[in-house]
Length: 397
Image (cartoon, rainbow, N blue to C red):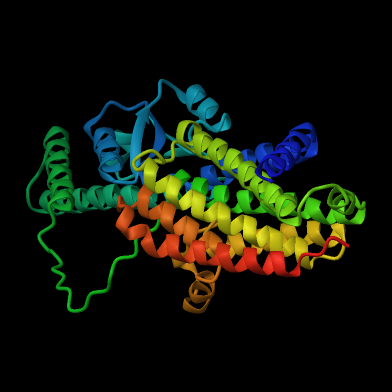
């Protein structure tokens, strides 16, 4: 009995390995999709590098550079000339580059308009950088206006030579700039209420476990859908006409689905760990426990789908639709925490939620195996109920 079940499982795996379309859906497509979504959802926390060309060596140009560098959202990269700045932006190596003109300091001292040239891409982030750059330019313009006003008032009372006026202007400009760096007015905040901070996985740590769970479920749905094809082609009926028990047939199929999902899951985990940089390796035993429980739940749901689907077309359509919907609700596409409270409640009825939640406990929050007990219990309960119903409703005719 067990030998026949293993032969059936092995034949299923061999047939899947020979099917190029199946391999694309099981491996290539999940890898591409996870990589793209992981790239879009990662980053954004560190400073943005912008280019700066300084054609003016005056202290005023240095003050402008220091003002940019003080912004926590900026990292300033000095460039040699305007051609390099244009090249870096056109090649999308930098979102934005500025040029401080050679007469920047002299124009400020004379109270004339100094134009800073900016080249930028059409990235959405470049418009946010515009506002930060305008903040620095307004600050220096205020310094220059303060210095010019103060020198003009001094000149009304005391005759100043050009060199004295220039020295006074520079001194007042520096004092004004110092005032910006060390403001005399502070704002003190006192927290009167508090709420629990919601931590959410980001980047590869979100995309890798989420899409691994979703695509494993989709792969097992497709695999279980092959039962519908075999039922239509009378393959199952011919097998049962031989000395093969119904239990051996179904157990062999279940074993094949489980092993297929295990291979797919291991490969996607390895890809997430070593290529995308997700932190899968801190608790391998916990990962294994969640994975086995989830695979059993996915096999059960796939079997139930095969039992209820009337045609192969129905099975394929529901495989894609259910996988994507359950993935969206369960935290594969985005953290569940951003959903409404109602959808968060609904998400807890999906196996993907409990798998992704368990992975996140290990990957992003550093929790141990005791924290996984609710996840394991619910996934095994889903597996038991769905397998029972799948076997109950499954028909070979």
